[in-house]
Length: 129
Image 1 (cartoon, one colour):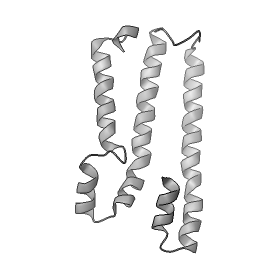
Image 2 (image 1 turned 180 degrees about the vertical axis):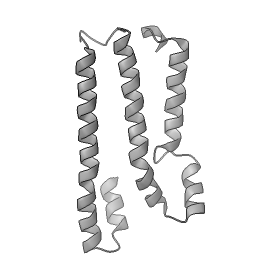
Image 3 (image 1 turned 90 degrees about the vertical axis):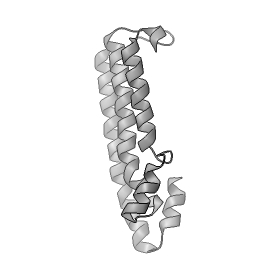
């Protein structure tokens, strides 16, 4: 990151943020997932389902922040691409809306499967992975 123009502090901050995100992203999660299972009493699959969306949003936010910082400071791009700030923000907004719509829309098929098959945990887990 330093070779394309990020300062040492910003490059270090991105490294730290991505490492912290790794601790909340399933299935990495470190010991945190097992502590949650032990203390809360839910299954591991329930914990992973609960933390997947916030962890993904955290990664999307990190990528967006790094990209916007690079565009703002006119850092070099890969290849012959020209990046415009307005187009970058619009693309990220479109991606975020599509991402949220996908996860909002997934709840209806999951509810239907759970209604048809009461013990559908393994089937839903297989569909996720």
